[in-house]
Image 1 (cartoon, rainbow, N blue to C red):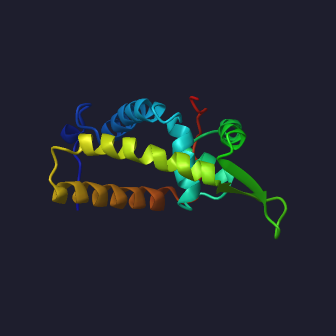
Image 2 (tube, rainbow, N blue to C red):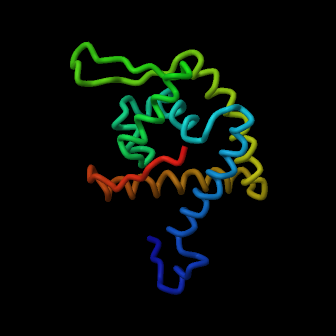
Length: 162
């Protein structure tokens, strides 16, 4: 069992700071790469999350991205205007509106894959395949532990920077 000590968590080594730093830097780099495709990081992530079945509703999307309901609505409105997302009212419960990716949205999500993949491959170029696999497995284990700890609690949300 791992056990961090105060000396292990200096600002240069603090796990939370490192994770936030990676997220901040990778978002900026990903945003640059996706600009060549004509899509923002938030738009691309939305298309992938809906397409891959990770989220099915605007509420789920907002929670996944950490966006307010207003920011999520603006994001979805933009994708809907571009013909990339459809909102489909549930037949079983008309209060529920499900999201689906259109053919145009699928094509845009696919076009974004290679620039993002190329970027990540650049970032892990100094790792061998075993290290890269361990990196992903460790992240999955950490996410699982944190999700179990958080449970169903509502977490604070932020406005999207679109």
